[in-house]
Length: 126
Image 1 (cartoon, rainbow, N blue to C red):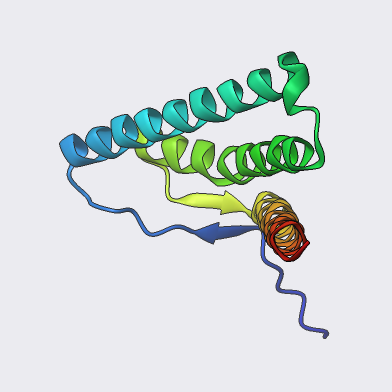
Image 2: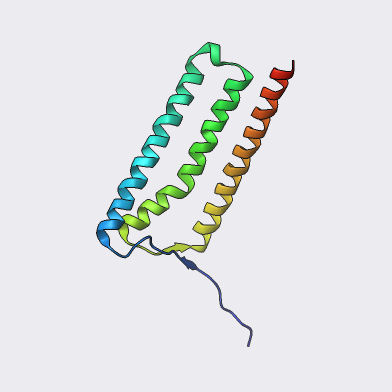
């Protein structure tokens, strides 16, 4: 008889077991994510609307803002849902998708920052 065990869910550790602190975590995550959405939205609109910012650095700032939004929107909603609904599981596919998208956006952000540093280096040297 072959071994047929398989994973369908992962257990998440809660920040705390007290319901009041879970609601506080939800409010903090909500405030932080809304602040990040607002700040990145302002950067996106500023670069898109102002023609003086249609430069290579403005393009990099626009993409950096998009990747930052991607990083935040990948992990924070599940943490907020877990805090609000008092759940401690995540599906295997959900965890794999979260890990893939987070690593994708993080590596894109790291690459953009590297390119932006090189762009400033070239601008200073010339």
